[in-house]
Length: 296
Image (cartoon, rainbow, N blue to C red):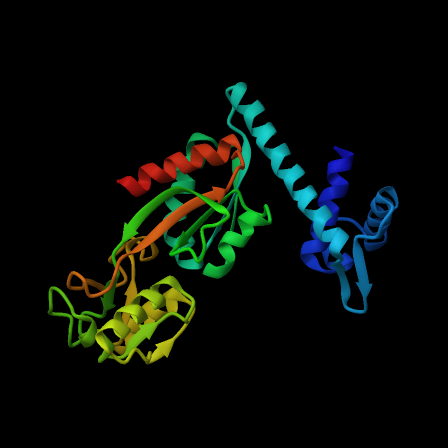
């Protein structure tokens, strides 16, 4: 376990890019942490960090070594989780990589219910841009990824995928609010509020606009879904979303209005893990609970 602790120290330094910053998070002095790194480098017979004026960064040998470290840490967590499962006591730690909108609306109730059954299981949820979520699996920084419209699926083994229809979000006093169903042309003519290029929703809306020859210039562009919702409520614009990024509550006073069939192609919400990796028991059980929630 002392060996694993040294590996955790190196992982922390690699992520922080600074021995001092990593020492603060790991409750160790910078000098002691530096000695740990030097000891590992001496054991390996090669330096794994490049020292520079602003901190440290992994060299090519370090990049290779950090993959080994993260694989060992992931394997240890999987074994510990299986041992706990055999004893009838569910323990473990579930690491989730997702995007802000999905994480904020889909996960809180699920995690609360899961921990009510298995209070020994802990979670870490890290939100990233859509283009970075799958990278967290590849780097072994996450057990599972939850992402709308993945950029690429080469390294991700799909566990769950579910169709998500795009709908419009309006304030009750918006000129389009009385309509039961909307067309894209009307939405784009009434102050469209869009996430930035690179997001799954933006790509679907823009693709539909190109097909129809429509102008898709947003009145406001923001990477914060909550901000766009607030703007829709206050400014009379039209935001776009999908069910699992939109929350369950109607208490915000906004209307969710569907689009005519075929106006915008549906997207898909994916849950996945790294190819050829066995999930820890706690993570695997959580995926099953997630599947039940999405199916319902």
